Length: 129
Image (tube, rainbow, N blue to C red; front, side, top):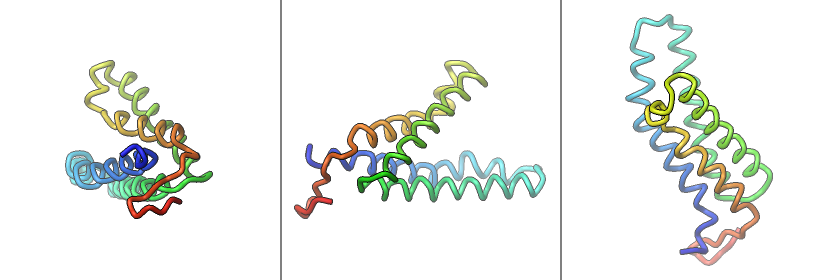
């Protein structure tokens, strides 16, 4: 089991992408896009939402490998987590950390990707990367 630990960031990123795409689309994106905001705002939000979903899904693939891209993405995940913490505290105080919980997956995923960088990946097939 410990030999699969380097794949933890990839698993967390895949989980995050799944939650974003299959849960967040309905509870966050739909209220914004089905409202009376101008098309420019609704369309921009929808496009950004799907770009972010793509980023999260591709991150899972990149985190399953090692290299410079993994490190860069890890810092983006950490930065995203910090942005959610600051935004929550700024807009709603401590209780908002539970209303905007994205940081709970973003920070650990990015930190795990940095912490486990350079650790050889061992796949169940016995082949490492």
